Image (cartoon, rainbow, N blue to C red):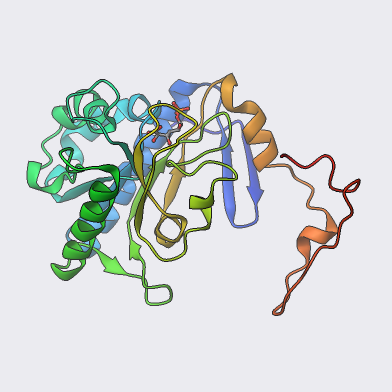
Length: 258
Ligand SMILES: O=C(O)[C@H](O)[C@@H](O)[C@H](O)[C@H](O)COP(=O)(O)O
């Protein structure tokens, strides 16, 4: 049974659906995911899905119930992680373990189509290895590349956002947010523990065909309000082909972070 949003907003091309409670979010997320699974499976014979950690996995629980558990064509799913903590796969901090225990162990996705990180490598090695895995999957036809950007296109990314506004392991103000070339990179000083992680970069996130950003609970309310503030200042609407440089004195810049 689908649940109806109590409110709809839009932010540019992004649609924002607000539900009465987390249960309704979960119901609606299952419906969207199963519809996209059917569409991509029918069109291309496969469905590439990217998971995050956090509360997202629990929000996927309705997919484990009727009608989805038996109607979704799980054999066509290919599962990836937008970010992963560099810990053994059986460690309590592992996003793989979180997803396996709460979701993947309960549906018949072939194990060869679940792409966990190599947990025997360093962060740098694991990021290189995961990027090589994605490139191999491009060569075997599981993933396609965007003809405009050259980055891999995933059918659906299921993402969360932290109270500080981070998504994947891309934290506000961190230089990794500026990465333009790598598909997968690593961080050794994540503000959210554990500190050592690998993460997809923004160009890969931006190449995805669909993103469901799932945010529930009071903890993230401040970050949501900041990200969705309705009023763009006129200066934020300027978009030019050449360079646009701000010249500020220290007083004018005094309320900026750092
Ligand atoms: O490995 C991680 O830390 C997660 O992938 C992370 O990016 C998560 O998606 C957000 O922190 C939101 O987490 P919550 O849903 O628990 O707020």
